[in-house]
Image (cartoon, rainbow, N blue to C red; front, side, top):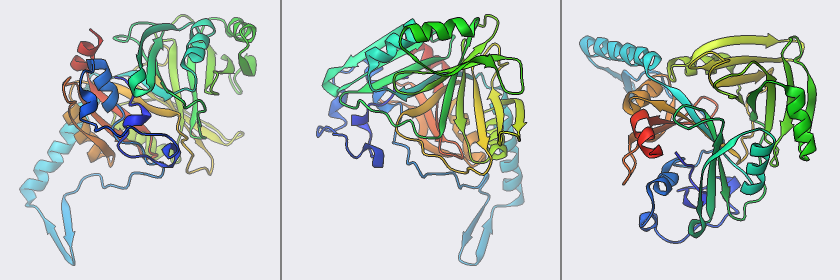
Length: 359
């Protein structure tokens, strides 16, 4: 799934106001596109309003009109409750995997050079669309059908990225943190934390930054099938977020750790153990309820066997659907998109359709 270039966003929040948009109609822009390019137009759907938070009810069984409360029959309510339980239980057993993380960069070639030479990633595919003034590239440590990868998007002329304060970092597992840091330094990269044990633990870590300032935490581990192992996002209510990702996304709470000395708490969420799969690290900083999301980080794509049931489960948990489930025009890849309680976006992609896209 390729990210939508800025030029094809149907609405623009403030951070896009300075960018130029084409005057040609959206429909006509599809003519002559390859399937991957068509998919690029729809992946993000509508731009994420920075202030948009979730406020929906978990399950709407009642409707208020004036002072009159209308309700369905007891039988209908019982059926709805059973349906809710079935959908949420299904979400726990659905075949899900984090596919890729999407974000924008200011210089695609420079970023790819850093990722391949310093972080050891491989370029999996690249797509340049000069007539639409954007390009994207997928990089990772293995093929997309079995590994979590990054999708970088560069919009022509947009050379500076505002990362904001909400995005935290990506995590990469390496066998020798000190050796990786030395390589980053030799290539002119920026090291923001020298190698050493994590505070309050024994795991050796370090932090480095890519050319746009995205932080990467290097974690010293034994060889793993999923080196790109973490995406850290900050949230305003950790318990609320944990509940949402457990029920709506079917993720498992792998561990939770409070650090009162440093005034933050983290929760690791995912579809498998941390040493073998990519996980989502949610961080709550004491007293901080909202964050600036900037215009860099976009979303995580997750595979599912049924986008329709996925969207239903998200609604039942109070989530907001930003793109109704269904096939994309022309290519028929089925997706649905949503926002979590803090406004972080995720896109669910039909597993079978995703594999076809990679052919």
